[in-house]
Amino acid sequence: MSELRAVALICSLKPSPAPSSTELLASQVLDQLAGHGVGVAPPIRLVDYDVKPGVDADMGDGDQWPEVRQAIRDADILVFATPTWLGHMSSVAQRALERLDAELSDTDADGRPAMLGKVAVTAVVGNEDGAHKIIADVFQGLNDIGFTIAAQSGTYWNGEAMQGTDYKDLDGPPEPVAVTTANAARNATHLATVLNSRQYPPY
Image (tube, rainbow, N blue to C red):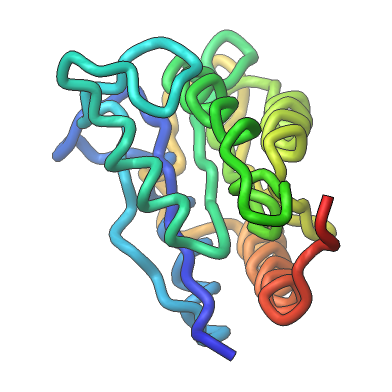
């Protein structure tokens, strides 16, 4: 069996090299995955790329989504990480889901969508409520596209409402976050191992 691979899609609104709480939590998920023997690709901070609006695999005119798309296609596990803004996922995250919609029409020789058999993990940070709703929305979108969702594979941190402490300002992850992150990585690795050896039936 080939080594499993993971990539993180960071949907922060902050371009590199600005510190990002979203990227920090995603990196902690990747560290846990690496501990289970999963190969980890460099994380992709999507705002650093010129990703055009649209629902095609390549929107042309300098669109850099094809580069991002290839990194996702090369991975067995996608860590989809977003901050919380106004109670919702970031606009960058929404655009990523819209661009991934094109994968439904890209099928293999057996008629399966390109992303079928890949596993998704979600990581959400923010100083306001919304994490559960965001995880639900992201997982529903990714599942429609063909990703499989492992048990308890959404990890998140919500800071106290109406204050300025960010996840990256903490000395380390609170124990409940660390445990949830570890569980998400373990379960995602298990599921990806199963799917890597036994793909879904042909359509």
